[in-house]
Length: 289
Image 1 (cartoon, rainbow, N blue to C red):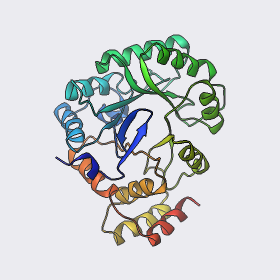
Image 2 (tube, rainbow, N blue to C red; image 1 turned 120 degrees about the horizontal axis):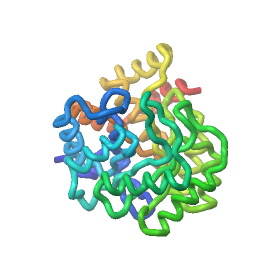
Image 3 (spheres, helix red, strand yellow; image 1 turned 30 degrees about the horizontal axis):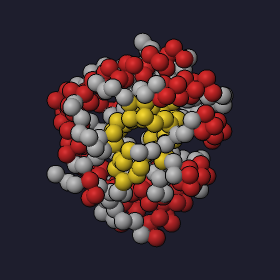
């Protein structure tokens, strides 16, 4: 077993919860299109158990994955949960029969989603709940007051320890913080998509975590050739180099790469531990500029 301190990036504190900066995203454990059960159920359970055996203490999920599939797998694989394990979930979207992600952010939707997460995960209280905003195409403007206020009420009732937002614009982050403290922001960000650079730095100054999703996706051939050149120079995979860059980009960045393969999980952990040189960082920084 790899001890927690040996994971790349060390740890970060979400409120009063300590998590490894290298976490695990459970989205890929569901079936194709994040719908239905996995083709390899024993393999999915093995990945979750391997994540914990490696020392990972941050698992990201949502009851919409499947729907209800990944949370059930997490419970089956890991319950009763180790005291060190923190599970971060999302509410604010559901699934339709075509595999879409329609919003579900009315007060009733959110209360129901929180209780369903509690049931499916087998928890009395949720560690962190992110409010998912926008839609599948990205963040969209609009007030978060009613939806985030509903989650703040559930937090006051003792059902949620900490709150965050996902797929959010900077103005929505600020509005949410005016209602209740947040411990994390989860947005799309990677070497090629750098819109949140200023937000990341502002959150770091506040001690708030930033959790990028799709850490490798979205590269054009030109951009991926630059990444591949650094990866080849370091005898690493492009994913490993991209994950290592994220960890070195800012100390408040937490990683949640997903996979349904134990071998790929181990590969991601190894890759994220690369110590990139100044030359590497300069070359990689040019991708998103």
